[in-house]
Image (cartoon, rainbow, N blue to C red):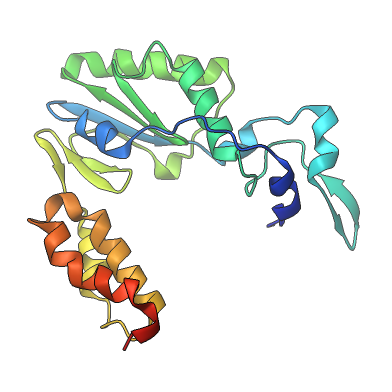
Length: 214
């Protein structure tokens, strides 16, 4: 179910809590012998709303009026709220052996023999705060894997083959939206492309002159 919280979001002050930088998170995985990638199960729904605020996220259906008791998707500050919670509960572990970006978690270990202990501490925190994982999106004790859209390996990071394939399979842009989609996909791989800014300049010039797009 998807609820339009547009009016509520307009009335809510913006929460400027910072999200971690993805490039720093993936770069921190280099030289790690073992990795475990974990994904929270319906992460936002694991944060309960204060009873006094539940009426603010009420909605009407043919069956009656209902309200969320947990934080729903679509709220302006949901991402910042979840990141603040995760940063708080994992503060002793972050940067030491765990990296977290909203509902994506990665346990990294420099030595194989340390990995089980690192996982035990992580699971202990998750149990303490009753946070659940989605087993279908978890991978444990691997030497490489996809994290935040990048392929992380022991010697660093590599391009995600799926992102490359998405560009190769695209047809030549025929409208402004398709050109924007192409430049967005190229930008996601910019750190792997030599002189990316220079090579992408024709695309950006085209977007700046949107009215003359052909």
